[in-house]
Each structure stands twice: as C-alpha cells, then as structure tokens.
Length: 251
Figure 1: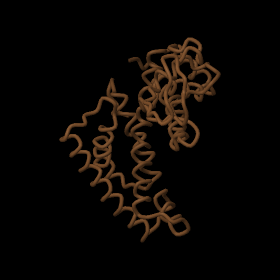
Figure 2 (figure 1 turned 180 degrees about the horizontal axis):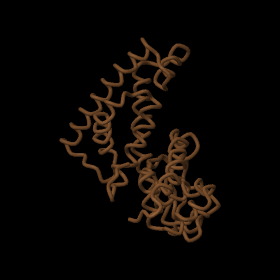
Figure 3 (figure 1 turned 120 degrees about the horizontal axis):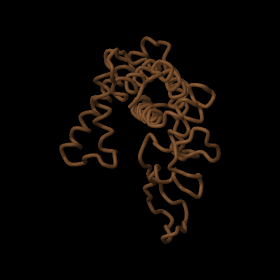
Figure 4 (figure 1 turned 120 degrees about the vertical axis):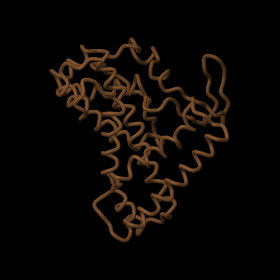
C-alpha cells in the first residue's frame, strides 16, 4: 500500500498482493516477478474475448511463451540441483515417483503462476470496488467478519475471475432457443450464467448475506479451478484487513 491520499486498487494492492503470494508459494525470486508478469499478461491477452489476435499479437505471445518456458525450465533445473521449501521443489521431488517430463513440470508451474496472480488479482480488485460501491455491505464485514466468506462468494458470482469458458456438449441439449447437438462447442458467458433469475433471487443485487446455490465462476467437476481455494483465501484475508485500515475509504 502507498501513503498517498488515493490508490489504484488493481495496481497498488491487488496485483502486488497476488504476485507476492503465488511467487512465494512457488519460490520465484522477487527480482524476477515483474518481468514474468509482463510476459504472462502478453500471453493471456490472446485468450481474452476482446483480445487482439492479429499476426503481431500472436508473434508477441509466442515470444512471451518462449521466454516464460526458458526461464521456468532454468528455475526447475536449479530446484532439482538445490531443493528449497517451495512448490516447485515439491513438483520436482514428485517427478522421481511420478512419470512427469520436464515439459509437464514447466507447464504446471506456468499454469499455477499465471492463474495464481492474474485471476486472483481480478477477484481482489472487483471485490474491493464492489464493497466501495456498497458501503452498507462493507459495514457488514466490519461488524461481522464471519460474513467475509459469503462476501467472497458473492463477488465471485457477480464478477467472475474469467469472462467465459469453452465446453463441448457431451450429449444433445435442449435450450429455449433450440437444440445443441452432441459435440457442439459452446462458449459459456459466466457473468450471464451467474445472474440467472431462475437460480438467484434478485440476481443483479450485491448481497453478502445471500445463501443458496454456488456460482459457476470456478467451473465444476473435473474442470473445477485448482486455484479456487487460494483465490478465496487471499480475498478472505484481504477484504476485512483493507476495510480495517481504510475505514473512511471511498471510491
């Protein structure tokens, strides 16, 4: 946090916190994290619904992917030679008993790092803005911290960490506008799904006392997000802590 009268919630709080947490967990040196962040953002841009996918954007993403792969391969090799108390060392140790290739370990680390800060930072920033826009809900957390878990779930429902997911219909599905044949690829807009009035009463209302079905923001079944627990934990710690420090904060 800064000592200035104003802050950028995403750049000054959400991103630094999430990058620090996942960086420490994996054992990525602090001095390397900003450069890696830049490459991750470039690579993630081509997967964004509104992202650029022209030749220049794809070439830039390729360069970032190569830079990330080279860096993480070197880091994995270092942890193989000199293990430390971090998740990369644990993955390397698991390699001895599980048939994992170097490429698979590097891919896992890249997935954990990229999703461990970008989507988590989105959740933190969106949650803080939601609480600033609804001071009555922020006061509920101040006076009853036990509601923080509900608040995190409500933030994730209204503001999913990712905009959409792609799925394939396992069988024919009848919808209000027609039938989807088996094998049809479907783009699921999570923010729309999570505001289904047939599932959520008053779906556009930000209500941290809401109970009932969980949202689909983290997917489901075998596609459930592995990083969901870390994202929720960071938010559960961050929201009440920030509200305590910034009692008079306003948007």
